[in-house]
Length: 391
Figure 1 (tube, rainbow, N blue to C red):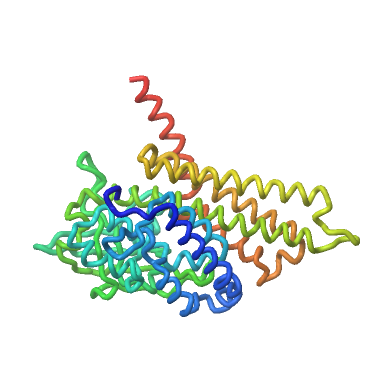
Figure 2: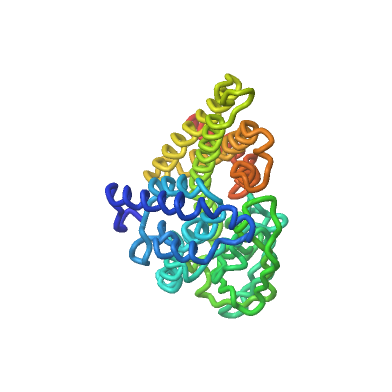
């Protein structure tokens, strides 16, 4: 993407300011509406599309804003400040689904899909997770079998973000058993209206109301050879790993934004609410909780920015994303827990922001690679690096 037109620092400052204003003045006041209706209001969705948020990380030649990951994470920290369903609405277009097309699609595939993805006319879903394959795609069981010049796809996916809204599924399927030739995983572009594609009812989840996920079943779904991403079966696993690594830095940044909101709510509550005639924030043990929250937020922010810079420069696209994802998603869980504690009984009440945050952030430690998977990537990567150095 280095050859693509880049957004200057000055222009990006304006973009970030607009996003912050949109999030805090248009979305934050309607968080309880999103909670109650389990949906993003249509006028907010339209405003997000008009701002270019469905394609902010899609290159400009296909109608996006062309932001790199260093800029992406700054916006993600703004998106994290409100209901995570907002970011989820356009997150797959810019992230794990859209980036597969941007980085691995053929010119024809990019021309066919990316402008619609960037405008929000097409919602792209990343169909990887299955009952036996989540953070590690190696256990994939969905199959794609060649039939003449076509492929026939059979299998089932679960927890697929935006599946009920999707116009395009980026589907990971096994074309052969793993062996010396590779993992045997290929990626296919499957229109949501293709015969044999069935989207189940939206999942009932612990949190993240308004962010829709569902099961997707592929029953003898026939697609042409032009649906094979990159025109090459071997592209699949690399596409999955690359998109997930980038997505992990984004999720880490999102976690920092949500932790910032939890901290702000905590400080506000501690300064304004009294116990025994004095603000609870005057008590040292409450101040200690605020200090721990603040330290976590600021550490996470620095870590995310460092990981994004290393990703963009190419210095580290494997360990650093996992470090950021592991630390920041664990951190936001602790910050949210402390936020409820600072609020006392009020923090357990529905429609109080920290109650929603407490439920929403639990998912961040699970998707795009669990904390356990991140630890394996980090530890294994360090050992491999040392072995290579000693050879």
